Amino acid sequence: MRRVRVRSFMLVVVLALAGTGAAEASAVCTQLKAQLASASRSDSSANYQRYANAVQKQETQIRQVQSDLKRFGCTSGSIIVLGGRNAEACAKLTSAHKKMRVNLAALERKRDSHAKRDTKVSTRRIEAALKANDCDGTRASIVEAALKGRNDAIEAKRTASPGLVAILGDSGGRQRLNTNSGLSRSNIMVEQQAARGGSYRTLCVRSCDGFFFPVSSRANPSDFTRDERTCQMMCPGTGTELYFHAADIQESEEMVSARTGQPYTEMPNAFVYRNANAPMSKACGCNMGAFYKEMERREAILNGGATQDEAPVTTWVHPVRRPDPGEDPETMLDAEMRLTSEDVTAVLSASKTERPLTEERRQVRVVGPTFLPDESDQFDLKAAPPSLIR
Image (cartoon, rainbow, N blue to C red):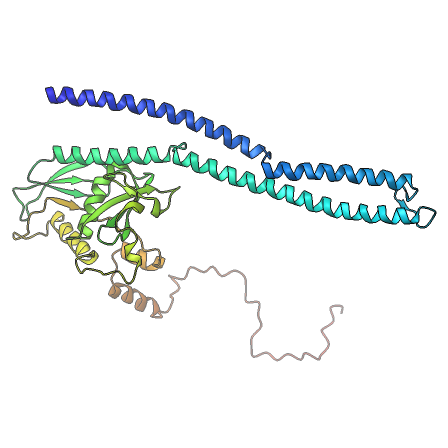
């Protein structure tokens, strides 16, 4: 009872601290979002202002030169006057005006480039801060899913009854079966797959070299315990751990551990398998062939084909076939219909045999008389056609 009270007190403290942290994080996120909105609208950086002031000064000087050109009679609106008593002064003013125009264009380009560059840098910096503070809630949802999966695993282990055999199937719910084939005194608890529509992708990761491969493409946190057992069975004798990530918005490199929530990139042997020169141990591997062979053996037990010398198993995983993306549809259909190569050959050979079509089996309707003339008739293409008027 005392232990329960201590745990309850610790839980209250943790929730209070979590609430305080959540409030602070919310305030930080609100401030960062306001800064991001301001940065996207503002162009007031130091470099931008410096070149903007230079542009204004250059425009003022250009207006002054244009006024001098008119005052000396060098121009009349859009018409430039050549010669005259102020020809030398006009030539100098015209040359200065052209140089100022070129310089103004260069200053405007510099000003605009600093505006875009500084805005992008500021925006990226604020977006990185938003991600670091988990303002979009992605990290919180992942950690919550990891904790839920771990709690489900602890609860399943605590409530598991000794002597039961768990089998993972491909439909919802749980049920217990009795088998008379070599396991007459054993109960089989079928722990079947959860309903589809989960938002997480689970991957099996080898601890020895960081190699990983997918287990489920659409899983819920309640499926993590099942997928972790599948992962262990695929790589017997090798240390493995189940990782997951959001299926729609994250890549495999962003996955985290279903047990601890630690990112894959912080794993000691992350991506070691990509190094061809890294020393590899024979114990660091998986045995998919043995896994699927074991699945077939357990299928036989469920279907009543097991023998008396079958060894008892505590945890079973019922395989769910996933189609190979590189497999053609015809091969996939043959596998689904359980057609062997002999069956396909027999069907193809039978279809190639030509058989005469009887009138009873003929399904083509013949309409009208025969319109084409007999091939034996002779035609004179050079002869004139018969007259229609007699």
